[in-house]
Every structure is written in structure tokens, then in C-alpha cells.
Image 1: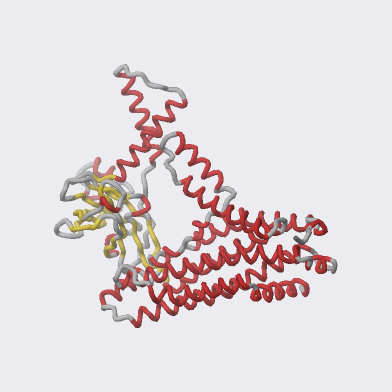
Image 2: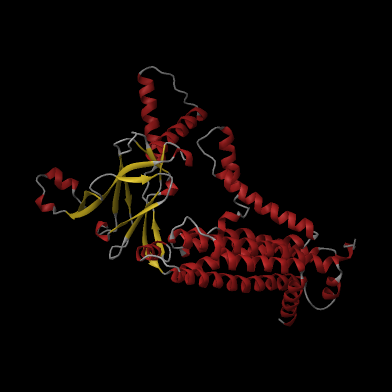
Length: 477
């Protein structure tokens, strides 16, 4: 292990002598001190804390990722292009040890910088929170919605595929009865099925005037006795800020009431109640429809009494728009239920760990690319690889139910994401700033998908290329 640690120490010393690395350190210092202290947010106490956290962590992640890539490419190519590697490999040190020592040295540097910078931001934000003259109401809202880690529960969605298949069979039967031609080829059936799916998803998201939409949430804690938060964002007609305005709506929650099967009036009611221990009695959460600004996130507090003994909750919304327009929810915008599950500090350091995994991968990609390429080309390849991954996320987000171009883009994006690493995979700042718990399952998924199955094979491939590279062919320009 002596040669390995010798390479680690040499890597760290060389890094701190680099002018580019020193410049990145200055930029990092500027971000961790001035970003959380100068950003005002939307003018509210909650917005101030949220924006400070989000922008500070995002800036730290971006700068340290850039530094990891650059330093990985620089350290691997520098020794080769300056012929220093010839003196190293002439000794009893394997090239694998050299590669791992340089990579580990870069990771060690950035781990230290990450811990120092995120700890500084943590203390600055908490200090500002206690120092600012926020009202008690604002402080309570920050404690409940930001300085906390809340588990998120999404509504149980119906099986869109099964509904679409039943609707397709019904439409084919009706068309045949009225003598209308039906294209029953594979292409024709597939197109009809896609059109029906798109129609069903659109109808499920929309709420017509005076219409009611219900959502069922399952798996909620049954012994929980604290506040339950309903988070949502709805839209009028289109998802465009210029079209959004004040609207009206009425939230309804189901209150669970125990059912006594013995008191059923007849056999039919007994059959309906078989295996069921409670019913939900709808209760309006306000006496009159409330005003809601569309296009913005809102939260309202519910009580745990709406959670059934089996951990289920029913929520409904009735459209009372003053202009009789349709309102609709996007699936990602709720409604969703949030329940406190851990502390803000625990959640914050989970975010730090995800950022650390990102830096480990970035440093490894830089070292792998520079194992066989010159520094400028290695940086170009790594950046292109990451940009391709980010672009693939955009492609995979195109509508599967659109035209041929959207269909091709969807499958192309999904295919590329099997081998590429998108930068979006490590965007967790919105969890911390929104008070949402970063689940251990999500952290494990990021580790397996992007480190084990994508980055690690590239690291091994880079080490293999580095071992097979003919160092004598490198000529100083």
C-alpha cells in the first residue's frame, strides 16, 4: 500500500499547485459565502430559505463536478505527456495502482471540499434563519415545510393500459355494429390504442367546471398523530405562466367511518361490505370554494384523522372556476401527501452523500478518458458524454403517444439512458429545499444504476486501456 498512498499524496500536492484548480477554489468560496447571504428569493421567509439552500447546493455540485472532471483529465494526461510516468512505471508499481491512486487522490480532495462547503452553507442558512426577524407564523411554516424531511406519498393511479384495452375492444365492437371500417392490422390497432391512452390520460388530468376528481393514497402511517400536508399545483387550460390566474376550488377529504356488517339491511349490502371495515364519508375542507393561484405550488394542512386504520386516505377536488374553465393537474405536480419522517439535518447530509457519489463518478470519468486521450480531447469526451445523457432525458420525456418523430425520440432516449449518465440524475437540491425526504431507496437506486452499472464498467475499461497504452509513442509537442 506504500506506493498507492505515495501516489495519492503526490496527486493532492500537484492539484493544489494547479492555477485552474486554485481559480475553481476561489469561485467555490465565493458561492458558499455570498450565494446564501445575498439571494432574497420571492420576498417571503420560506422563499428565502428555500432559494438559499437550492442555489447554494446546486452551485457547489456544479463547481466541484467541473473540478473533478478537469482534475481527473489533467492528472492522468500530465504525467504521460511530461514523461513522468516513465519513471513511475519503471519501478515495481503497476499501472492499475497508479490509476487508482490518482483517482482516489482526486476523490479525497473533493470529499474534503464538499464537506467544508456544505457544512458552511448549512451553518449560514441556519444562522440566517434564527437571525432574521421572521414572524412566528413564518417560522412555523419554515419548520413544517422546509427545515424538515417529509416522506412523499403519491396517489394510486388506475391501470391506464387495462382501461385503454377495454375501451379499444368496446370501440371496435361498436364500429363493427354500425358498419364502420376498422383497421385491424398491427399498425392500425397500435395507433388506435395510443390515441385512446392519450385521451384517457388527458381526461384523467382534467377537471371540468363543477366536476370532481378523487385520488386515493395508500401506505400512509396508521399510528401517526401529526400534521398531514397536501401539496399541489393546478393549471388553467395550458401549462403556461401567461395563462395562469386566480381560480376557485373546493378540497374534500374522506373521513373513515367503521362499518358494522351485522347491521347491513340485506344480503346485497353484506356482499358489498365483505372484507371492508370502514367507509369514507366526504367532508369539505372549507365552507366555501377557496381562491387558488394556478401555476404555483400550494400546501394546506390536514389532520391525521383522515387516515384510515389501513393507512389509506381519499382526497377530492371540485372545480369552481369563475370563468367555467377546465382545471387540470400534471402527474408530477400532485396532489401528493407529505408526512414528517426525519430531521432536516439527516436529509441535508443525505443530499451531501448523493453529491459525493456524483463527484466520485465525475473524477473516474475524467481519469478513464485521459487514460488514452490527451487532456483537451479527454475533457471534450467526458463533457460530450454527460451532455448526451442530459439530452437523452429530454428525448425520453417526449410523448410516447405523439407522432412518429416523438415515438422514435422516446425509444432513442430510453435506449441511450441504458449506457449514459445524465447530470439530472443527481439533482436532489429540490428535495432539501422543499422539505421532501431523500429516500434511502433513491440513494441506492442512484448508486446501482449510475455507479455500479454505468460508471464502474467505464472505470475498468479505462484502467484496461491505461495498462495497454504504449507510453513510448507519446511525443511531447
